[in-house]
Amino acid sequence: MSEPSTELFVRLLLAHEQDMYFYAFSLLANPDDAKDVVQEAAVTMWQQFNEFDPSRPFLPWASRFVYFSALTFMRQRRRAGLVLTEEALEAIAGEADDYASSTMQPRLTALTKCLEKLPAAARRLMADRYEHGQSIKKIAEVRSLNLHTLYKAFEKIRRALQTCIERTLGQEEPA
Image (tube, rainbow, N blue to C red):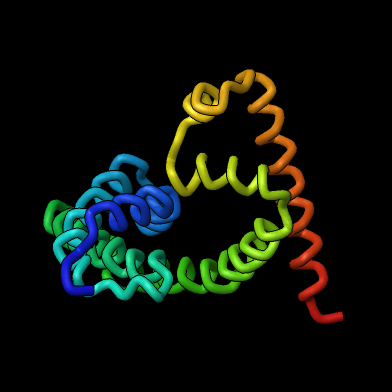
């Protein structure tokens, strides 16, 4: 990628911000500290976004920035009297990485398969909401749909995806 795409960065950041926050929270155990670390990581990610390979998953790349931002944060805190060591932080990060790769990746793969099985109209609704970041209210306005009906449709789609994901993961488990 020769020049970073602001739009691509923002889309990826927004799509994975919650996962980045949970990762930071697993490292720091303080919600405010986790928010600060994710914010610092996002600034650094933007500065180095030209090094990101869009053919690879964003979250593992972003997680490294969160990890190093948390490490810097902990070093600063240790100087102020907090005693969690770098080794402890690294151990926690390793556990979080193992969890993400062993648990989240299969679920994301199953989600992708299940999204492909949805009817076209449902896929368009999900794309508007999650890929394009539109609020449900905005989707209802643009499509001239009743807001309550649209909420019910999203609830039905989410239940169908959850069932499909559980079924897909159950089929992939060794017998």
